[in-house]
Length: 411
Ligand code: AMP
Image 1 (cartoon, helix red, strand yellow):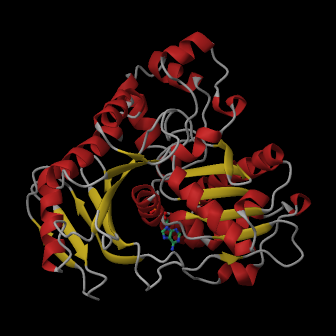
Image 2 (image 1 turned 90 degrees about the vertical axis):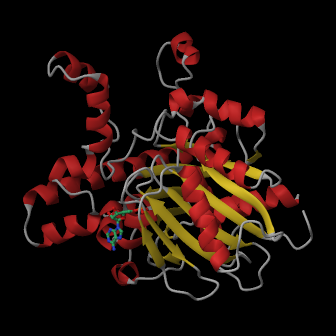
């Protein structure tokens, strides 16, 4: 690596999509206070279909988004198309300024507790974890292989969604099932959204003017997927997602917590197969299953129009959220901050107000006028008198992946 190599390409490969950002980690133009600058962002969707779409925004050039549609056969073709777009902006991936490629990898099991430079052994281990992450790890592996083929000389770094949660104590991570069965099949609570929980809990400490080691935070990552975490002194001690991202909060299309016997019931009484039940709980449940919509904006519009089904879905969502705030208050003992993040957490003031309503005895309250402010900046929404700070901190998983990647390859 030359002294000039300060760029990091972040890749987030889904089964039929590829999201990317190119960041300059050494740029003086600060982005988010991190010293990093975003040079380009984009997304390839519907890979493998006739109507694949690439949307590319060259931020450094101040350019408008360029969109192309047409068949993109696979991830290799998608990354090649992205590389061509970047080259058009003078940001080609053959540039000596590129220091590394950082990959979001969903499941790192117990072995990967930190970002890791990818070699054959690491790839093999990510492959070994496919049975516990069948929807995500195969796409991540494809993304890594494709990027390796494009720049075999460059360090490729895996940043794991599960890594931040590997500090969970055994009593929080283990399910109360037969130990031999659990261990034979690696069944335990791993947690997800870890890069977001790590980033947001650290930014919360900054917002409070404290060191992460000195505060306890409950992070509520409320996007289409949603998870809560209890972070003591910068280390995760509990989180709501489990073996898979299905457990925990009510989500856009996932049920979250459910009596496991519901699944036997669906099999024995409703005659559904394991795959059908999987699809029901992951894709047709949550807010979507409850009211037919999974977008919180639409649900709020329907509630404002007097729609009772939407109102009940909202109440179920809030009830679960409140239970987790209470549970994690008990787990942490002392809470310094409750922080909302991701699409719903950052934008839906009614969700924040309702989730914290009635928690004054826990020291938590939301100031209505602060909560109504729309901003992209981290901010407090609790009144001065509240013992616990309630905050909104926009998450930035790509920046966190880029920072972890850059720190590792420049160490
Ligand atoms: P994410 O997964 O973090 O991208 O969050 C996506 C979700 O955020 C969407 O499904 C919406 O429900 C929600 N969302 C985005 N913008 C708003 C908004 N202005 N108000 C309420 N919810 C929003």
